[in-house]
Each structure stands twice: as C-alpha cells, then as structure tokens.
View (cartoon, rainbow, N blue to C red):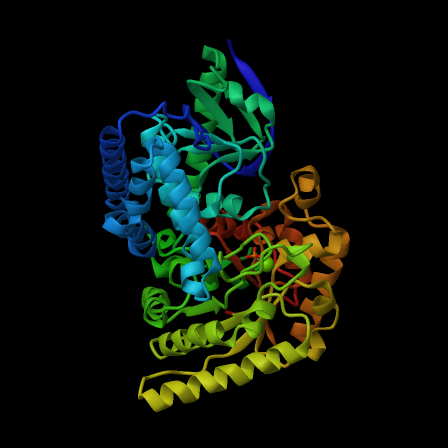
Length: 535
Ligand code: PEP
Ligand code: MG
C-alpha cells in the first residue's frame, strides 16, 4: 500500500529507487564456541572487512580513497587483533573480545598527546563496526547499490563522501537538517534529500519516490504516483539540460552586466565533469572536508590545493583556512564538550589557538599560490586582531618557506562575513575582500542553530534582519571598492536572486550543481545599477 511521508526538502530533485536502510551495528551477540573457532571467526571477519573496503577504494579517488586505504592498513597490522585473540583465549566470544580490545585501543588513541593519533579514533570506530557486523552476521548496512534511496537516522558528511553517488540516488533522514553540512554536500552533487521524516521513515521499503523539491516521500507508490513522479523528474531534467547547454556561457543579466559565478568545493571529486570555463573560479574551499584525513601533513595539503589551482587554469581559487568546530568537528583537533560549540572555539579562533596546525596549512596554501591566483579566506572572524594575528602567521609561514628554498606567493587575505557583529562593523577589518557566509550569519542573527531540525523553517529564506546586515556590508564594500561576494547556500536560492541583485551583490559562489540554473536565472534578471562586479 502506498505511504506518503512529509519531511523537509534539503536538496532538490526527484529520486526514484529502492530503499536501503543504514542502521548502527548492534546484532545478536555470539554465543561463543571453542577458542580456536572464535579466533578463526575473528580472522575471517577482519578479512571480509578488508575486502569490503578494497571494493570501496576502487570507486574513490584522492583523499577519499586515502581515508579507506588507511583503514585497510590498520586492519593489515597483525598487532591489531592480538589483544582480542588474547581475550578469546580467556574464553570470551570473538565479538565481545573484539569490542573490548577495540574500545581499549580507541581510549589509548584518544588519550594520545599527538593530534594525528587522536584524529584516527573515528577510523578505529569504523573498523570496529565493520568487523563486528561480520562477526554477528548483521551486515553493517545492506550493501548500497548506486541509485538507491538511503534511509538513516542522520548521515555524517564523511559517510556521505564514502558512498558512490555517480548513478544518482537519494537520501531520506529521520532527523537531520536542510542547513546541515551533509545537506550541503548533497546539493553539491545534486542528490535529492529530505530530512525530518520522523519515526515513519522506518516503514519505508522497496520502491520509493523522494521529492527533494517538496519534501514528500512516497513508499510503494501506486502506478499513478509513479508516473507523475517520472514526468516531474523528466521536466526537471529537461529544464536542467537547457540550463546546462548554456553553462559555459558567462552569467550576463538582461541589462548586460556580467556577474561572477564561482564554486564552493568540499572535495576534489566535486570537480569531476566540470570545466574551469564553466565558472569564474573557486569562491570557497571548505578545507575542513578537503583535508580532514591529512590534518598535519603539509605535502598532502599542498597537493590538494595545487590540484585546485591547476584545475582553475588561471582563475582565482579561494582557500578558506580550517573552519573546524561547531557542526564540523575534527576529532582530536576541535574541542570536545563545549557547552555551545557554535559559539566556542571554532574557525579562526581554533586556528589561532593552534599555530602549529595553522602554520602547516598556511605554508601549503602559500606554496599552492605560487602556481596560480589564490586567495586566503579566514572563517568566523569577529575581531580585527584575529586578522592581524593571522597575517603575522602568514608572514612567519613565508619566512619558513623562504628559508627552506621553496617557491611561494603571499596571496590576498579576506574574511567570511558570518558573525553579525562583523557584518555591522566591516570598517574595522583591514582585509582585501569579504565573502558573506549567509548560513552562519542567519543562524547567529536568528539564534537558530543551523542543524536544529525543529527550527529548520527559519532557514528557508533569509530573515529581513540578516538581509539588512548583508546590505550594510555590501554598501560598505562598494563604497570602499573592496571585493565582495556571497558564498552561503542562499547564493543558490533562485527565489532570493532578485533581492541580492538589488542589494548590489555581483559575485556568487555556489555548489557545482547550482551553477547552470543560477546562470540561467541571472539571464532573466536585471542587475542593480550599483552591482559590484568582482572575481
Ligand atoms: C556560511 O556560513 O555561509 C558558509 C559558507 O560557511 P559554512 O557553511 O562552511 O559554515
Ligand atoms: Mg560558515
């Protein structure tokens, strides 16, 4: 029988596919057998987990593959299972022994002085659950076929990145939020997503229609619903195709103003299928996602940034320094147990408290800047002193590189405008450019956490108060000839485009999946006389 559920639309598009549920590993504990049998069950489970990981690696590239290769290497270390085997020898079933030994191992990693080790705890948790699912014969989750609709409580951004979305698919979450980072990643890859479906999501099985435009999910659709959904999917794809055919053309308004359209990037994979000619460069690189697996490694960071600069072929690449904390924790780096992590040690505040980590990132950026036009973007800036301290560290990074004889360039430095106090006093910041982060500006202006589902309605269109702050900073930037762009998700909200054009915003940085339609919409609008055109 057809079942209709209503949630909140988080990423547009229509997905039609079979449901696969992601459930945390629990399963029935093993009864236990003779130690020899339990030991061999453990070895087989480790082998099977490695095989699963290897087949995933084959589908991934770059840093994403590196995360899983690291997990395979950990499973290949014979020392890893020694402790568990010892517990088995004492008479424990293999699953209990494995859980106990891995929890002890994770506690050791967590207590390590080395931030790199602490950052590996989540990898250990993944390994623990993978092996456990084989020991208890409960698949970690049903294998995910490309094109399926993933149903889960919530989805971590790293989990999303590990899945294969090349053949489409959809996401239906019991909880979640349209303003979360996983929703942002889904929009970037054009994967339809609905959140906040509640308990009823558990009952979804078989063929399902997910409408990321309206938030409707239809389980076991009747013939008529299915045909309607297919027709709607076709209409959307025709509109999209038309927009995509003109994707390479610049974004010029009806009255002939050329605007800048840049990309928001969280992973090198998002550039697959895109040409640099499709955009005016990269307006925001969320390095907290791009380099999570390589927190302390200058070479790995340099390679990732250099790949972006080379891809952009002379267009500007804006690299935002780590914006860890808040809803983007980096295990072992961002603080744990803050009463309110959104208001705590996040973004530039955290970077300045860890110059050892910050300098590594700055050196990697300065080296990449030698390969093409690059800009440094500082997140969560509140005080001018933060910019001053960041500049001093940039200078130190430059001196270190000069001493090491490595090529580098010191790029322009700009700030995110995402803290309301900064939006209202842009004149206090000695910077080269501003980038408005409407996601955080809205959450801080409205006292509504961006990941709070119950408050998600607040996030649809920006509050007039947020718009007033944006207008204030835009006016200041234009009057003082300082580059300004918008890189929050609102930049891809076509309903708000006329408001932004009237405000005078002339540069938009959006998820790759939004470029074609944003350009098409711009062609239907007129720009304000004062629109600032910046790269
Ligand atoms: C923003 O806050 O609008 C923004 C672009 O940054 P992030 O979403 O990564 O916090
Ligand atoms: Mg932000």
